[in-house]
Image (cartoon, rainbow, N blue to C red; front, side, top):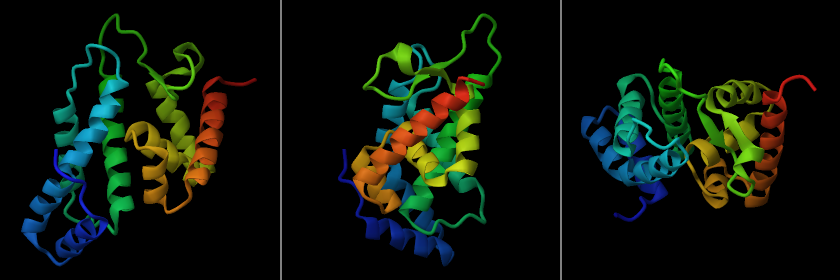
Length: 187
C-alpha cells in the first residue's frame, strides 16, 4: 500500500484542476485511491454479510460520482472527502433501498464500543435522521459522516475539520445521542 499523500499534494492537484488541467483528475485519483479504498473497506466491514457491493465497486462508483460533474471544484481535502462521504453514503442508501423480497431492514451499528443490540439501527432511518441533524447541528453531522460513513479515526476527523480531537469526541457523543433519540420516535 502506498504512503498517504501529503495534504499539500492534494491541494496542488485541486489547483491544477481549477486551472483546467485534465491530467490533474488522473493524478487526484492516484493520490486518493488508496485512502478511499481503506475507508471503503472499513465501511464495508460494517455492512451486512453477503452484501452485493464490493469495496472496489464502492470506491469506483463514488469516484465516478465525484468526477462526473464538470463544474465541481474542491477547495481542500475536507471539501473533497466530505463529497466522498456523501457519494458513498448515497450509494449505500441506494443499495439499501433496492427492492428485495424477504429482505430484513438493513441494520447498522453506530459505535463499536456498545453491544449491537444497544446501537443497532436501520440504515435508511439513520440516513433520514442524519439529514435532520445536518440542519440542526452541522459540525456533529460532519463528524458522523467522517467517522461512520468514511470510518475515519477521531484524529483523522479532527484534522479534516480543523478542530481538536476532544471536540470531535464531544460532537460524536452529541450526534449519536441526537440520532438515537430522533430514530426512536416520540418519547
